[in-house]
Amino acid sequence: MKILSIETSCDDTGISILDVKGGIKNASFKVLANNVSSQIDVHIPYGGVYPALAKREHTKNLPFVLEKTLKESKLEKKEKPVDAIAVTYGPGLEITLWTGITFAQELAKKWNVPVIPVNHMEGHMFSIFGKGKGKFKIPAIKTPILSLLVSGGHTELVLMKKWMQYERIGETVDDAVGEAFDKVARTLGLPYPGGPQISKLAEQERKCAPTPGVGEFSDTRCRGKFVLPRPMLYSKNFDFSYSGLKTAVLYLVRDLGGIDKINETTKAQIALEFENAAIECLVYKTVKAIEKYKIKTLIVAGGVSANNHLKKEIQKISKNKVKLFFPLQELTGDNSLMIGIAGYLNYIKNKKKTPKPNSIKAAGNLRL
Image (cartoon, rainbow, N blue to C red; front, top):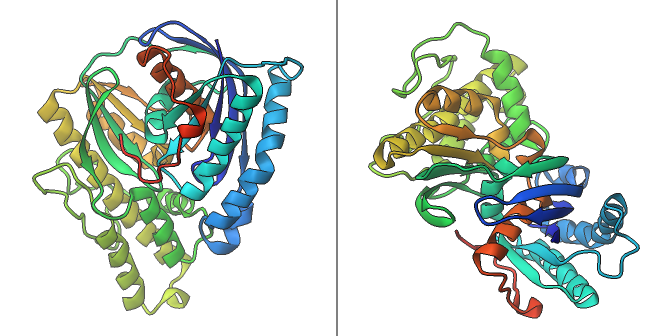
């Protein structure tokens, strides 16, 4: 069957078409087309995503992205080009989620096909299987599975004792790690999107000789000039907190005389220590969860999974212990390909039963 998938949970407009077959544990996919329209340039003046503008851009971009996707898949002349439509219905910005849902509902009516509502975070989880082009399969992976889902809006640890049955065992109690990266970048006067800017500075500064780190998992952490807190690092649960770390950077900049008094070297030193602290919290809690639940497979996904320091630290602790999956670089951010994968697996799991298209509603705070 052919599935068209739509992603509009934040500021990227994505539409893909997949040709899919197989069951829930052995599905195989062929990417017929995969396109995304970024809104970064629109939001740069605001230092972050401005929801009303994001909605406007989605509304404007969806028809053009659809046209391009249908043309690339060579299905543009067919009266019924696909067999189903998968669309993100949450979590995310409700104002932008609605643009994708409404668009999907209109297409479903036009083509007389079902609509599959997809949880955005489940999409990130299954993004690890995706390929930007060509064919791919869902491989046989061993349970229990632990997913570390890290993005601008989410930081959570999700346990799968059985395939596609989820239990959230940890999450942020305040800011998400990606949100903290962006806010610290603004504090340091770095342009949006801030996460990659912080990491770039940190990598430059991380050329110093390695010294022992705080977390027991890491003995090669490069310690810089400054020391920032690791909130909830040793708490007796798997939750995270990034608000205090973000505030600590704000106070540090204030104590140094403000952003106008800080040179580029000092910015890099702060970026290094912030990234070290943020990533150490993620990895330490992940290690503890692996040990407690005897994890056999570890998935790391979401926008922050593109962070090189996180990748290196996760690879250290997972070596010879668990099977590790990261998504391709181009699939770490929001994309419609992952929505198509999750959509099909849910379609099969639910025995091809789907809700009435008009009953699907945006759920900004949707949880796994």
